[in-house]
Image (cartoon, rainbow, N blue to C red):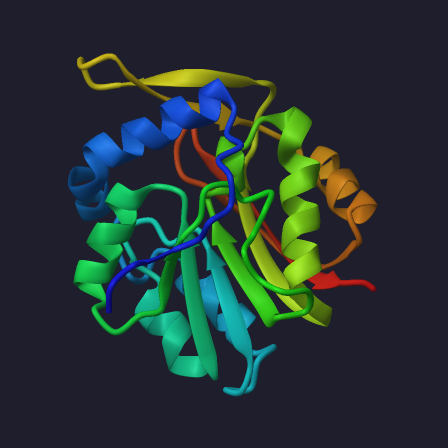
Length: 216
């Protein structure tokens, strides 16, 4: 299936655009390094329990397409999006039948209100500047039905920085949160936290994951 393209105007900040450009440049290499289909196995199992094999789900964003097959197995309709066309091409190559859409800005999702029964967003929103994260969460809230279930994973820490990637001058934005800090933002954007997981992987990486219900 060819990648679809939305006509939403690009609204990325310079730091976000640099991050997207970096993912475009390292797409194949990054996807290969993040291909463990069991990485989110526990969280996917929890998420699955809320859908009973008949819901529609939006994945924001797909990365290299690692989670597509699992999500597509238990949902009635799967749709994946990403801002990086490089990653989308890799994801489409790995999942040729998947419905993938290139978007220009997560704050302006090209879907009608209440389109999806839920959404899955692993390690994506940590690349959004903190002063714009609420806009992204509100956009996901808009396209998700009342009582829909979402999954969001971020990294624990303080502040944010641009991470150097290799020796080619490539950089990615990372924003870090405490559990309470991000929970407060979720509540302000109309989400009820119904569960969470905490996963320390190394001295520099600890994932905090939230399962949320959309309140409307």
